[in-house]
Image (cartoon, rainbow, N blue to C red; front, side, top):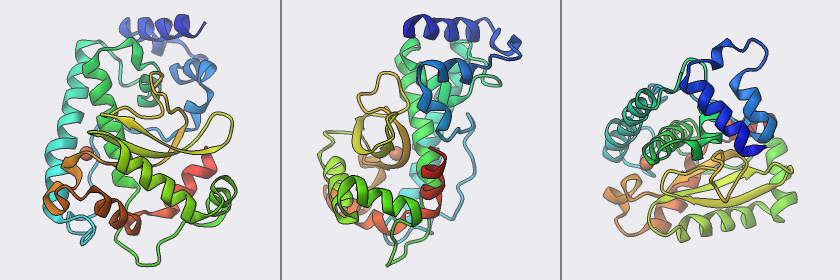
Length: 246
Ligand SMILES: [Fe+2]
């Protein structure tokens, strides 16, 4: 069933037929076999303006890293995603990016790398804000983290471990799993928890880019220092909203 539906989505999008279904939109089709996708934050196929200045995240992340990261690396994923969508005849006006990710095994490696790269970076920028010394999770998410991990410190420790130990390039995540639990995990390259190919599945609440391009200018080989400095940047209001929707 799962494979058949995936094939249907791809075939329909390739043929430009998805838009013809008035009461069976692509995301609802996907939600039928992957319910958590419908609760995930959808993101435009286009790169959005960075919601703050390149200097805004200093000193945790320096302005030059932000500028290169946003204008070169992230912009490159967006362009390559656009090219892949044209080549593979994805109707981006109809198929939500989350639905594309949920059926990514039906597409090329180029699509997988760049759909993930684009989604992950847009998601990442929105998660951050100017550093605050007393930054901490809020309200319902704070309670849930304590319930699932024993304490906020335990959660942070597990997250840091996942980020430190991701071999090579990838991401660390906090997700809400399809069975309603909070979980820390990591994915390689530009994979993410919305992908049907991912070992770590769930609604992403928080993600950390641990590719060297995200930190090397300031931190060089000291990835653990970058991870620790990053906690001050998290916009917990945004993460709280994602949690309430998930
Ligand atoms: Fe990145």
